[in-house]
Image (cartoon, rainbow, N blue to C red):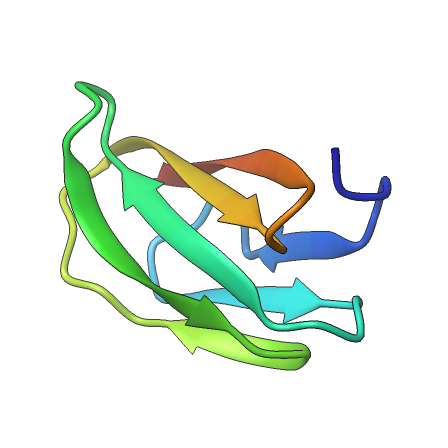
Length: 79
């Protein structure tokens, strides 16, 4: 598991784009899944703030993150 507080997302919940804040000194591989488990985006999250501006319907999403050895998931809510 990635250290607590090492990756944050805001605004959450929110209507507009999310900002993913990666406080780790490593690039993270990321996959965003919708509530049915369908992949809606994948990419890399660099250290620092990373905007995630996607045209998505309202709902609950899960951002799966890994640094190659550790993994974590963030629950994101689109209003």
